[in-house]
Image 1 (tube, one colour):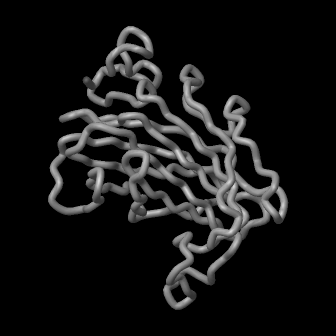
Image 2 (tube, rainbow, N blue to C red; image 1 turned 90 degrees about the vertical axis):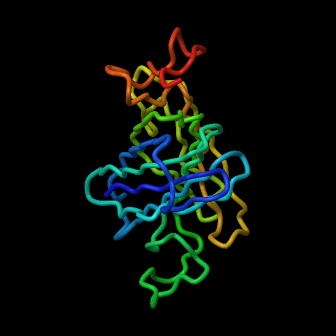
Length: 223
């Protein structure tokens, strides 16, 4: 299912926006890890360094085989980055306040053993243009002990986080959230997708890694 939101720096809404700029994303989620009966992914987005995250309407349950998760963002504000957060947990909405069995999301789990992937996507919006990016997530961030003192390593060059082989211009760093937080300690990967890896959908034959003219320092093809 495609999730679409209208997006601004201060507000996300599904009403009253125009198709001035559209950014489409696809994440290939990994298969359900061994030892789990269920595992859910919740996606949320924000704008800028301090923007508040808003949850996208549709999440996904991991299945026996890898499956794509698609989302689409529409905005009238073109400057700035988009932050994408993917949370993995065993309750259907990955939330704790107000989450109860009566709401259909199961009991609060603290801590869930699976962590988060946070991606900063550089300037993906261009006026009157459509852009897109896709990537494979073939390994999940997770704590390796109960105290979450050790974590799975993103090590993107070994293939845990993969864009096409000719565009190895992003990084993932390992981090950890506050162990006293409401959901317990979390393994967190902080990742970057550079602006040149955002494809200009309107340019025939354009490919990831080729969306900036005259090398990676040149103007974006959607500009």
